[in-house]
Image 1 (cartoon, rainbow, N blue to C red):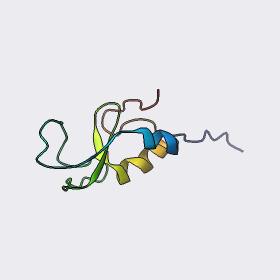
Image 2 (tube, rainbow, N blue to C red; image 1 turned 90 degrees about the vertical axis):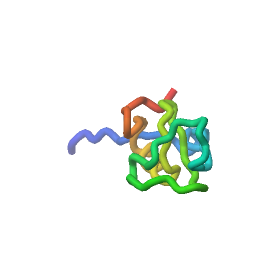
Image 3 (cartoon, helix red, strand yellow; image 1 turned 120 degrees about the vertical axis):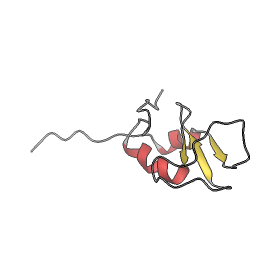
Image 4 (tube, rainbow, N blue to C red; image 1 turned 120 degrees about the horizontal axis):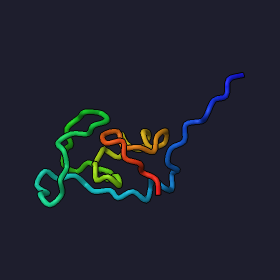
Length: 82
């Protein structure tokens, strides 16, 4: 039987501790791309975004499944664990 190393990502409690914001196109004090790098959809006012330690933002519904299987940012590959 081959030795399979399980893919380990963030726990639910770690995901809950990541900062979230409600997207607004008029918010100019935060540097956010126009679209989510996971689903490639443009952000719409009122959507919940999650900020990773590397300061990249994603739809919460897109990045949560990603981070359950990987601890790295899909853009810069920055480690998201302590």
